[in-house]
Each structure stands twice: as structure tokens, then as C-alpha cells.
Length: 217
Image 1: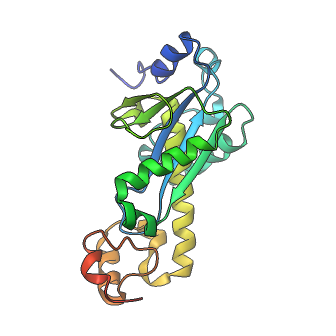
Image 2 (image 1 turned 90 degrees about the vertical axis):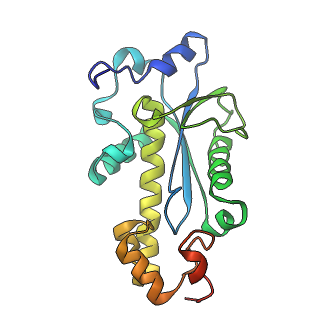
Image 3 (image 1 turned 90 degrees about the horizontal axis):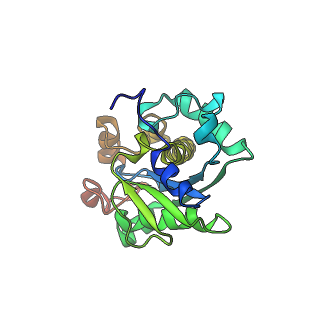
């Protein structure tokens, strides 16, 4: 199906027709990097948008990975200021990731974001595979951040929040270039780890951090 014909309210619409008025899209950012937190967000969009269409400020909303940094920032500002949108964001830091593993940390962040929504939404749309520990009933959608506006909104919220935090860490730990690569394993980042060892926000259970972990920043 072409992007023009894709109904990105398809999954929400099914639930809205079943009188489930509050459907939360959930997504995460930062599962793969060698440093920094994993961040999850939940977003509840108003059902009336399925008929009226997205506000102009959200035209082109999509999976955050398909957007430019400037687009993500613009969407983020509207998503966090629009009175019709419910949202929540939660992060799990590197130390906890090392303790419980990245998958469990991601699920913990998702549940922490959901817990901030009051009351809990009766249903969630989750990007990817089912989350066994999720605190509400769910529909898991592979590629959901490009198929559901609710998940796309959560994707933007999580990505912008994490990128901002990594830019702040870049000031605190300038040797690693976090503002450039956001903690992913680029050649520059790997070279910095080899030279300086791991800093406090590195995930020491991730290769190639395991051999570098003994060398303290």
C-alpha cells in the first residue's frame, strides 16, 4: 500500500469503534547504542482526528527515523503543548540496563511511561513484538511507528528526549562526541572508548564495552 493510501489511524479506529476512547501508542529510542539511557514514550491522540485529519502542525508525522532532526523538534513541540494530547516519557539509565539487560530495561521504561498516564489507558499499540510485562492490554504492530500515528507520536517524543539528553552528556563528557552519534557505535565513538575507556553513561555489558570496562574514565 502506498504512503498516500495508508490509513495510519487503522488500528486506533478499530479500537475506537469498540468504545475504547483512549488508545496509547508506545515506542522507544535507544535500544542499540553503547551509551546513555533507553527512553520510552506513550501518546494518546484524540479520536476526532481520525475524521478531521491531523492538525497542520503534524502534517507528515511518521516514524521518527524517517524524519529530520528539525522535523522531529517541530513535532515534539506541538505534541507536548497540544491540550488534546496525553503523553508521558520515561527513561532507564545505563546502570540499570547493565543490571537487568536492555530488553527488560526497555519494557520497564514503557511501563513507567504508561504509569504516568492517569488513568491508565485501556489499550496500547506497541511498536514491534508483544511486551509480555506490559501493564495494559496491547496490540503489537511490526513497523508500527510507520503504520500508526499514535506510535509515530510516541516515537518522536522518545527520540527527541533521548537526543537532547545525549547532547547534554556531550558537554559533560566531551571526549566521546555524544552529540554527533548519540551513543551509537560509530568509528569515532569506538576510537574514543579505546583511548579513554568507559565513562559513567556507557553500557558496560555491551560489546565492545566489556573489555574496556576495566579501564576507568
